[in-house]
Amino acid sequence: MQETDFLRGNQRVLNDIKKFEIFEPFQDEELHHLMSMSKIRKYNPGETIFEQNSADTWLYFLVYGKVRVMKDNKPVALLQRRGDVFGEMGAIECAPRSASAVAVGETVCLATDIYYIEQLTGTDKLAFGYVIYRVFSGVLAGRLRITTEELLELKGRSIKIW
Image (cartoon, rainbow, N blue to C red; front, side, top):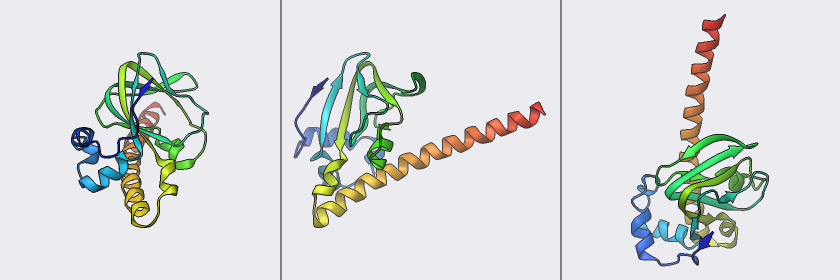
């Protein structure tokens, strides 16, 4: 993995991530808070981004490439859209990661260490916490919607079997 320093004040990266659908609602100042705790990480094909059962506080946004999410060495998702978020469950729960993430081809991510939320004070802490938890709520709501649709589809199939 190759990694930049923290992106504090990097206007080029700011202009790029503002184009991510997930960040469209945010103001530049809010994104500056996010970037001050973020790095760009580049992974080679097949390189592990994080392993199941590992513990850390990093949250990832896909810049380009593909990421395969694996649970117990079985593929559960392929992320390939710019701005896709992963690693949020371990970061939210401060618990061991429930799955692994592996780069499929050359992959670049914006990696954000949410540990730093606790180090902030006053309005900075509130602003950054707001940005991160708004991102989390959007991601989790989308995943819940997909899971609900899949459950309803499976229920429909089981009724047809009986």
